[in-house]
Length: 558
Image 1 (cartoon, rainbow, N blue to C red):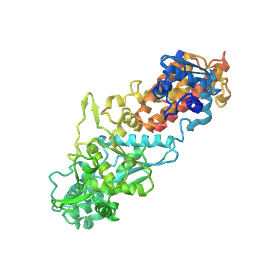
Image 2: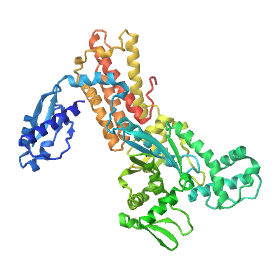
Image 3: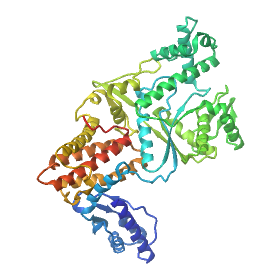
Image 4: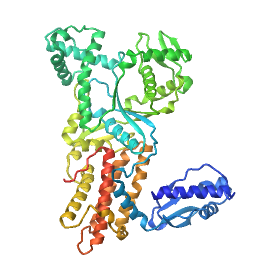
């Protein structure tokens, strides 16, 4: 791409200037920007301003030195020094037209790169407790984690998607789920029962109970003891049903996990106990009040944390430390956790615990997504999972569709609260951003169909004379296509899939403006029509690539 070539030119100029002693050697990252106005060039660089202090020379002198050492290039038409020392690059007129040909040549691979160099990355997301259906409150991590994985894959990482099942024997909510489920099972069997005071009371618990009876029968379930061990046994039986439904809902959302990891495995295989002994050997734990504590304050935490409670139960931190060991043993170079806001306070403790265990905290990355509020008619839809007043993710998808659900949940940065407007989501108009973007793709397909019907071949547009694309709106659209690969890389590095949602709307708007001013099919100008059809086809390809990263479909008709 042109920007990468310019960076290479500047690196070569800097190296040459340093070798001959014109400039001192210094470690600087070369960054390009798009000038605010076309007359200021296609790309601008502030390298001279950043090097002025170490060079001990005015920025314009540094800029002049760099320009003098720039190698010849088939891409750059001319270079100018502007203002206090900006280096502005004016590219040859054909560079944007070349982008159209490149898009058509690369197809689905346009925008992909090898920045990640095959580094193994795991993205763990959703991971809601297996105690009920996924609901709008924990749904945001689904599209985000999946789109982030798509982005990382697009820039060359080897990515795995994982769902952690919090089903360990010391998980209080999981046991409470088991107790609630057992009460409903026994109620359906006309046996004595007692619903836990703070138990799960939704209708879905009754549905699970009926399914358990169908699968395991009265005798098996009636024999489960009504104690803490029995509650855990019942929770494990119910988990199978819950996970099946969660997986089905995820598939409806377009999310497929490579791995479903059971926390119970860490206990059954002794990983938690081994981790405790390892921490003892390292001298970073102590006992107080019958509990086992980790000296996390020695590693940056605000207070020491309990690993094993006085009753012998392991804390979340204890299992988290064993879990990250398991991830690393599986060969991942980097582990990304996508957590909800209720887990934000755990991050410093986990990182301090890793440091205490001698594990580099930088191999992990924690992304906290904020809450989603569902609104309808300007009113917030209230919900409470334990009381059974929930809006399930499945219901939402069935109401507004997968594409709308994903796009809306990806429309804002995950560190911002999100209001999901049901009325807007149901609209089939340009006010609905999903409809607006998908309509742009459908219009592109319609243009290409019409061209074929009117005798314009659309399968050989790569042979079009792209030099004819000189209109301002044509150049604006081509520039958009040229910038796309860099935008994908930036979105991946910034962990920002929401940028893709914004980009898709911007591309749709840029295309609609082009279509409104540039007549695509014109029998009186067949060569210009072929060139514009090539641009239309390239735009459709990039829009499909972009929507594919979001996990949103690109319909051919609407």
